[in-house]
Amino acid sequence: MVDATAVKSSSEEQLFPWMSSAPDGRVDIVFYDRSCDPAGDAPDDPEACGRNVLGDYIAVASTDGKAQALWTGNGGQGMDVFSGRATFGP
Image 1 (cartoon, helix red, strand yellow):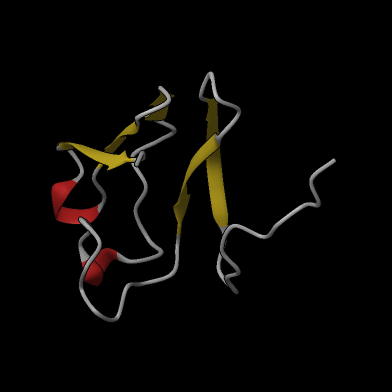
Image 2: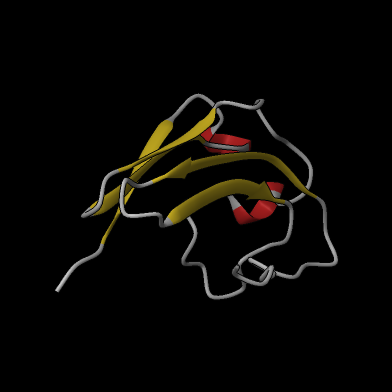
């Protein structure tokens, strides 16, 4: 049995989690987090951090080799849809 592991600690609200598992047993999780990204690396509108969330339009799909996530923007990007991919393997 595997012990529980914290995904990301935050003092802000984390909401609308979505989870998918790959055939090899890896579990992929995506969620909205209302904390700002001080490095500016997140596809988000820093001026709207913590104020505007379009809704629970978020998803992740998993295969052994990748996880593909989709989410909607917030703030000035509230009508935009984003996609990100993480790849796994040898």
